[in-house]
Length: 351
Image 1 (cartoon, rainbow, N blue to C red):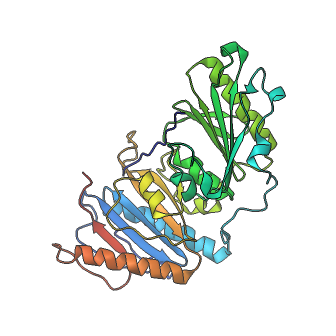
Image 2: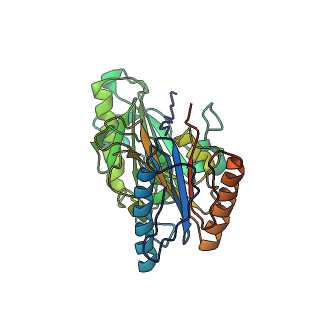
Image 3: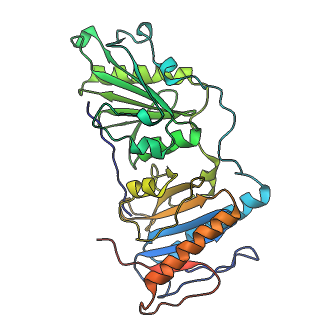
């Protein structure tokens, strides 16, 4: 069976924000200098920052907006839980597989199979690491066929229970990219490279067409609509997303990650040192245009926010990160270590 996991995307000067945001800087150049700027700060239980910014000034603008968003959220006591409400649909993935009478000529070509826990894909040459990185719990799959195309397996349907809506959102958005094509199936579904994928509630659904044909694509959409209709929860939108800046955000670039491994699968040219996520941490990121009128989303800066379980955990992770940056920059021309916390460095450009 053909399987592809698309990995893409490669690629402060801070002033005080009232009495709330007292920022310090690691300065190695003026804010207008073109370069490959990294910025970071810690506040409350968050670490937030920018990678691959064209100038320190652009990084500064994004940092100030995130600081204000975090300030308002902390003051209101919002975004406090790691899950997003009470789920209405909690049945097993096998229970969501459409039966033969629902699908306008498409029927199951065999008996459904299931995986649970650490058994995922043990019988095939497909890595399960991505699913484990996003909290995989259980899966059910079955192939479909139709007499119109010779009664042979043509569609593979997989339904994953990812445990939480955040995890389902994360693995779905791992596959999304700017300028992608969507199909409304009761949720926004991504159609790309022979696959249809969507997330709803705590479920991630992946449908693969083995051949390119209009009738097969139509069958994939019929399947997706039948599944989405059974899931009573909405498509997941974690509240932490509201902390990201809105201006110049590249549509389709939002990502969620729970580990540094997943983060580096998303972005392959990050700096050598980045904040280290603990087991209970949750990170989000997105691309932002370096130029307002640019249509080249490959040349974009990466903005991220990592939420830790509490302020102490965030402080510890940030201190380790800052110390690693200090050690890396020691002896660099123009490097100045400040005592009040924030990071601003001009990284060597990615190859």
